[in-house]
Image (tube, rainbow over all chains, first blue to last red; front, side):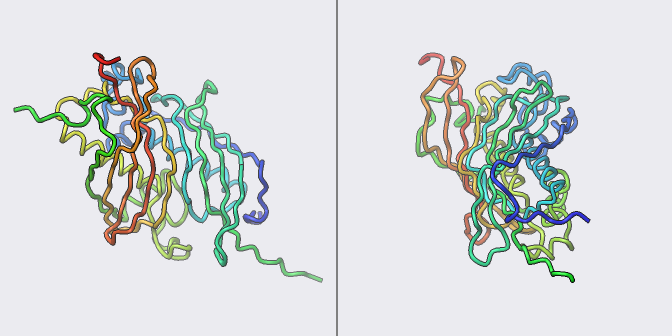
Length: 157
Length: 164
């Protein structure tokens, strides 16, 4: 069985990828109805008249998708997320239109020890989501709490 | 009778630094926390009542992105109350980005958050001929008055054509 990679095992400069995942019209409208009911996220016709020029996902839905892709990338690398501390900066670079897909490129940019006795250390991940044409949709730096409960392996023999 | 358009229908030039609003409150249910977690933040403390009890949080907590998404809901409905009939998608240019987003205290099922907004800065650069950037400090407080989330939003507002 694959072993957990604890915070102590991580190194600055590590890369991960995740996705692509496609966001269809239903996903866009459903998220907007729940959280961001503005015309350019709900109504194709109104969206064409807006600054975006077409039906596109809420920026918060793009963030949530980025979190899911980041989670998937770390899970497949056997890194355990114990929480999220914050996002020092995020930028929406271009709209994500209904029917488009995004993939994540992730780099570990910084490691910070957690508080004394804490079960975690902090890792900062620079996440870039790009669409199917490799154009940037979202960039963000995400500070995650990574499991640091590394115990010495019992020695055999 | 027309409602007085206060927020969305105002131009960039008419939005003063220091303006403060309370967008309203929202109580988080277990069901909505799990639904959001299963879709976007698949850690056990967001997705499964029993598994969450074995985590650091000793129970379910909302994804931080759900807290932000609910902020958006409250902002949209609050502004609609002030700008009835002008939700035409033109003068609100959407978000540019977020700075200094912090999740400070866990949000659990049954917790009620109250969301506040204050304009703290205006970026006078003219973007695509007609937009300016409004920077606002946004905070969420729980039922005990603890600040659970804080961020700065950078949102486009349309400039007054007469002053461009």
